Length: 375
Image 1 (cartoon, rainbow, N blue to C red):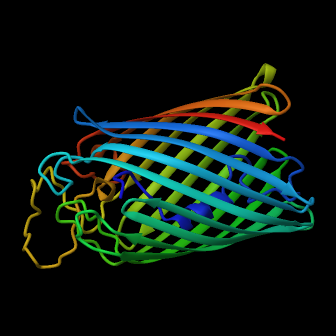
Image 2 (tube, helix red, strand yellow):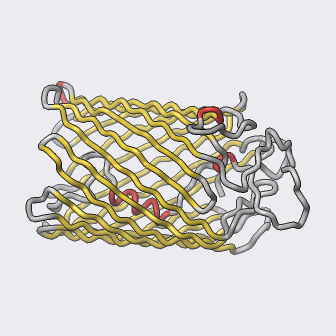
Image 3 (cartoon, helix red, strand yellow):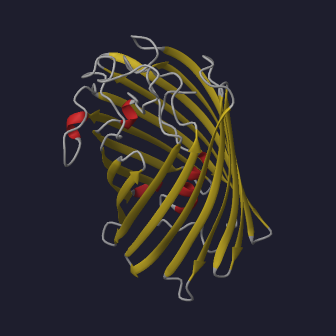
């Protein structure tokens, strides 16, 4: 099971179905009249306290095809190669634990278009040597007669199986059910807003078998709400996209995400999109700071079964991401794009209160390259 941040397949399907990079409506009201094939490659690297940690290389292939004027089918195949080390004191040894991992995933969906809405069904499957995930989702939209208001809904279920190589557990299960509701409203010819809410209820094995003293509750409930606003500037033909997301869960984590980007078309098919994102979260109620309680948590009693974790993803921190995407339409059918992101995380950057003081600063860079063709 990789040490990079992961999310349930069901929640990922719901998020992808509802929130698109453009105006944010789940699927267009009319079926696409042309298909599209896209090749992408992502390279991710992060470092902490002078140590290189995680390297991820992820090529992917996506295909979308229209059928009979009222249907479309989509599928994406991705293969992640992950290598590196976890932070010190966060693994089952006293220094960084090295690993190599490969994950293969596929998701597919079919959408039926109606005069006033859509219905979609999607499925996802991913596997690595110690972790298998399966998910199924149903999504739909319904628009008002004037097309100014679109309601969206979705449900999903994910089933995961965990078999770590250290045999801490064998055949452990994790099930997650999610529901989503959303509304998109056209305010003016230049403004559109969207409000979405999601709720997920998970049961099963949530601990990390590769981390020392990691014992988490067997239930994890998550609630999130997000508002987005897009504004188009007629003078420059650019579009500003702003969003805010609030998240809370049964671990007592509370998180805020502020994001913005500006899409500026230029001459000869060029488009430039700078972006910025700030994220802040409180620590889980059972998180202990290995930099302060080094390396054993205060009051630890062997065999007590108390909930605890030193996973830095459960700590209190703030993070800033700055990005730039450049795309070029080569002709009527071909488009190429390149994006770079710089991410930095600090315990002291947490909003409203102090973060986890023992958390070492984390820095990451992401490079993505894409090539797509309409057909």
